[in-house]
Length: 448
Image (tube, rainbow, N blue to C red; front, side, top):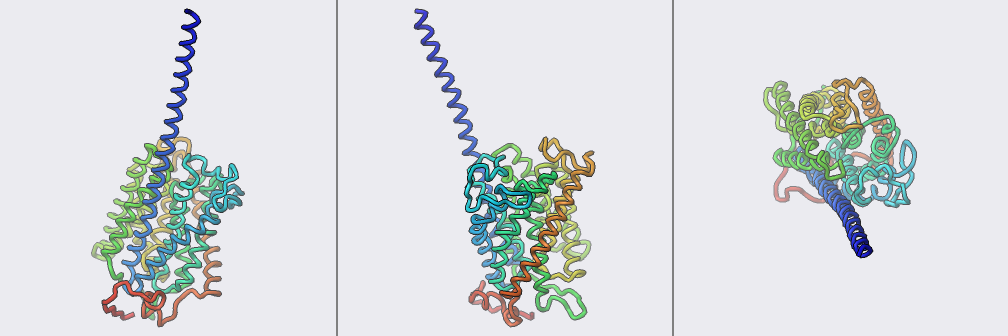
């Protein structure tokens, strides 16, 4: 009887242990599935930002160049997908040295190749897809600043080089375990890694191209060249605002409670920046300017991208306010003082406000939001260490983009040609570059 009792007890204990193990396996499996689904949904939201950029840039450009803008945004994602798979993802996240990855090309994982992404448990292909859409975002920022006068073949060459080399290498410094990460730089979702890279390359491209015909009078006075469809531009802004919740909250690469806080800081920064940009344009121009207000919203989103997980909602609101004022002043400065022709304000929105957001992390970060990461920023008793590293990162990425951007665009200009002819520019790139019209059947007149 005693022996039978012990046998029954042993069987029950085995069943219980098996049940616990099964429950643990089930929880782990469910978490993996949930995290993967969230990362793919967030990645799809970021991919949806591509048509947002297309609508914004085409709306802020003239009708005769709308097809060209759409083609550039389409090809950014197509070429980016291909070349980021071949080489970019390995350079950015593969095992290597402090400056670039030397393994992981074609997503080949030899074990430990992608340790820089080991903090998320989702499958490698999900990691690649999510990071790919960030790469495409960085590349497509440039198309707006170079709009209305760039050869399509030249732009394709730029897009390939940016996606395969320029973006991944500087990205490795911060996100791939490179030298800036080792120093303690933080950029949660890419104010510098993504947006400033795109913004600074946009500045180089715009300088190398020169202004559009008719943009500046003989005395240097800037002349406005209005976009042909502001409602289309507004649609692009709303799409971008919507997609940004995937951009920032998705950068957890896990379905965790933090995504609620990140979504809230992201939204409030965009809102306060739009308000601040509207008020600033109202004061300067005596009327609330629609395009500057729209750019203000995007500027706030760019600025909060780096610190969104590390700051309070109140701090995010302040970051947005500064971004909204800064973007208006910056657009005026580049247009009227430096005379750099940027049809959509990409340099100011992404380059300048991306730098501001990265710097703001060093000011406003609070350890309570992500314990054990950034520590406290300067305004919360953290001293100058974090602020100094953030500033170094801003300057290093700026220098990288200036040098590589000038070399790249010089070589493109030398061997392919960078700018269309005067005749093609006056008639519009849609006809000469693509043999198409965005608004077939409508007669488009231009004084330029």
